[in-house]
Length: 125
Image (cartoon, rainbow, N blue to C red; front, side, top):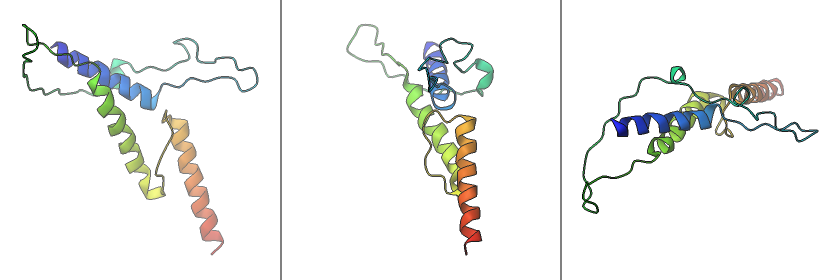
């Protein structure tokens, strides 16, 4: 159960990092605009789907309990899975990469940029 909670938490951290978390500074004053949790988005439990965690328990021989740490292993896979799903969804438009965080605004701008360039190329033909 501890491992499952560790995986759930690290997947949430990965999803937050790729989709929500963004440090924003004012361009003119260099004032941090996301200095509190009111302004800095973090994932909540209701932002995530249900996860099924499968694990294979293989005790280590390096300590008497056979225990091993899981760390934040789910973060690594969730980052790649989410960003690849977004890029895959946008690939018909020719979008091949997006900078983190992949906020809804960045996705919208990428779609708009590609559709405008497609419109421009068909008008010139």
